[in-house]
Image (cartoon, helix red, strand yellow):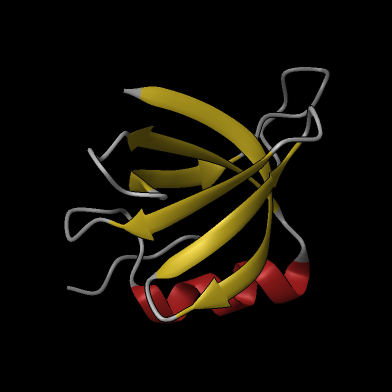
Length: 88
């Protein structure tokens, strides 16, 4: 599993693009076991909230599979307050 931090800047259904803090851009497909639902991605993109994505690579795909999306940690080690929910 890999981890990347950045800001979600494009969302389409369960897919999203993350602008990483190091300047890279990464494409993801939200996993069915993810910590968020597809409809939650829009608010993260609109709010430009920094997030940390835990992912795995998918063979022969242009996107990685996002398993967990959590608030990113600030430079001083303090977690950035972002509210995440998972539908019950």
